[in-house]
Amino acid sequence: GNSVTQMEGPVTLSEEAFLTINCTYTATGYPSLFWYVQYPGEGLQLLLKATKADDKGSNKGFEATYRKETTSFHLEKGSVQVSDSAVYFCALVERGSTLGRLYFGRGTQLTVWP
Amino acid sequence: DTAVSQTPKYLVTQMGNDKSIKCEQNLGHDTMYWYKQDSKKFLKIMFSYNNKELIINETVPNRFSPKSPDKAHLNLHINSLELGDSAVYFCASSQVRAGGQNNEQFFGPGTRLTVL
Image (tube, rainbow over all chains, first blue to last red; front, side):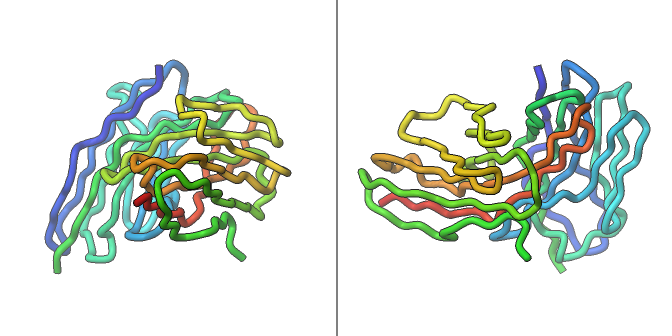
């Protein structure tokens, strides 16, 4: 089946620290991978995506590389800001899916202190 | 020009009542979804409609009934509300493409339901 496992939170960092949030997946097919972000009191927004192996998604200083050999899609940022405090969700959709169903990880709460 | 909108944003009600949450998308997408997010932020898909047809129906009590009057709307009606229904409910939409490569979902702002 399809599933996503991401590191448990909460993660607490000081401003300008380096961030890694681990995400691994299992999929019956060849998935596309996503990171979504949920700011306090808001809905989810797409942060970045990658559709094939070795693709790197990037946005707002965040990056994640699709690693097929390790079935991973870890999220990284070199220098976090207070405004990055949010819940981050890793997700996959199976290519060829006629349902477009996203499989989400459990979310990782990030808090950045000044 | 909100892409996916939900009403109401907050809903406080008594146990046993019936309530509805409305969702509309102006993106021209053909597929819409309802998710429930619990207090630990876990997201659980409940339903999905494609062109007004139910395509995903997870294990959800039959007190929950989705209704899609047209492609742009997917409403959620809940009968006989229980304490455990308290959560944030998110509507989402996407355009499901053959190959499923870029099925980004766009989410509404959420409806926080509190059952007393």
